Image 1: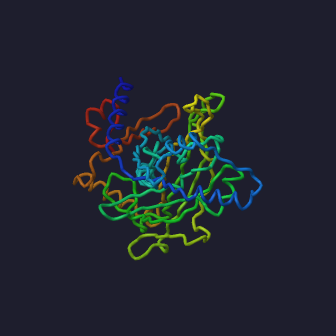
Image 2: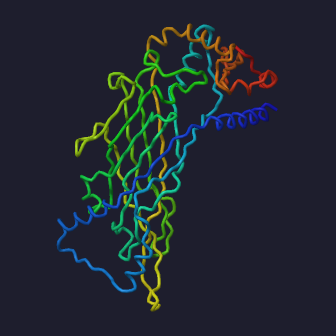
Length: 381
């Protein structure tokens, strides 16, 4: 019976978490000039390479098949979910120390928030035109980076922009790889998702410190080879970026603002690299019924993780009793957002370990009815 109620509880918790979705807007940058820069590099360093083109009906066909090369933005959305679980704390004898430990575990769990973008939709393909030469032909490459934006009303409270590192065009030609560089950053811990709490509490450096945003994203693709072998959801590259935000780096409005000028060394390096997206093999026939090999425009996907984290200050931990009382008053007065989280416990003596076993369960308060708590053998502390 207990298993049935736990299953029911988990379903309610997932539904409650899904209702708290927070939204970001993501961007994919496209720029046709990068293809010209790749060509210029080849002209400078590979003058002996034989180049040729096909004319007539084939040229006409390729022109008709060309994809609109205007710069574009691919938009997506993100959803964040909180994992739920039951943990057992053994050998806690002193009630005061147990309550303090419970408080510290609760507030520490508020120090992390994860936003996940499973995929970004409406992406333009990696290349603007198909190729008759091969799957890694860089001609028409248009992908030029990724960005992310969050707004509060009409105000921008978070913005990040990363583009292909133009100082390393040679890696595209020689290794079919590209790197990214951070160009623009706007971030404020006061408009972050921390603390990740059911209480309507703003971020404060008096209570929390070491705010850091870590961004990780991967680029993957699926394609068919000339041997009709399907490569499905292959990871081509991974990038990561860590941005520590300290009080002395904020302006008078509480924002860290960074713009990279020219070819300056970036303050926050983007780690990682990615292969170019392979073109998928297809082929076509001309009006004369002559068959030609053709490689497509490079479909791809990007997934993104944004992790915000911080730590507790010593003074905040030293004043845990005052904070705990304030939280209790807020719960009683209803000064908690909908689906506020509540901790309930049951305490039983274990004859085997000769110690008190405290079972702790965290869940939205409106889900934990008295009847459900009783059936789960839990009692409010």
